[in-house]
Length: 182
Ligand SMILES: CC(C)(COP(=O)(O)OP(=O)(O)OC[C@H]1O[C@@H](n2cnc3c(N)ncnc32)[C@H](O)[C@@H]1OP(=O)(O)O)[C@@H](O)C(=O)NCCC(=O)NCCS
Image 1 (tube, rainbow, N blue to C red):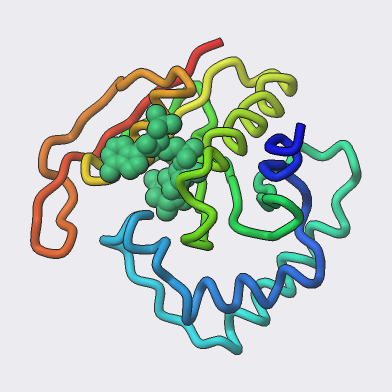
Image 2: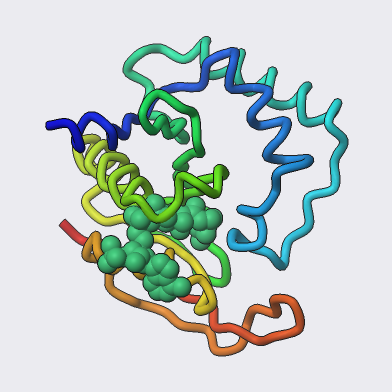
């Protein structure tokens, strides 16, 4: 019971106080970006980030309660530590059936490795399943062992591998797509 209480993961909409976390995660504390598509650069200023995350917050606030969310914040033991999201525009693959792909980032390094990512994705996939999405993709790269293991624990199976597609810090890695079917 005690350990359950200490490892509570919830998904929720963004709140006003999350905005400054995003500003920090997209400007100063960007360690997560070493793992999430590190071949893509983020080049913005703190001011631009503050403006765009404030706009995003206002947009989410205006959503009807029953609108299917594209993104949720991950809260771990009451602390905002990252996010889950979904998208249809896959990298290097067509998606004629419009199967959603899920993405995740635990931006706070000390929140990683406690099962939070697996539990957050499990909840998000359950949310999507309940809204008619029976199948879900996730895309990563062969150097991200933690993400591959997380996907494996959830039951994802590899459906596409593009050998050596990703160049990360001077080394070639495979691009990997996995599918979870309920
Ligand atoms: C990837 C991520 C979402 C996983 O969430 P998490 O809470 O850290 O993961 P969990 O604790 O639920 O599970 C991680 C699993 O990977 C294992 N693992 C850790 N490092 C590993 C490695 N280098 N290679 C293989 N497996 C590894 C852990 O042992 C654990 O498996 P186990 O439960 O069988 O022991 C999170 O670490 C993260 O956000 N990382 C930075 C950003 C990122 O990589 N995003 C995904 C981009 S595609």
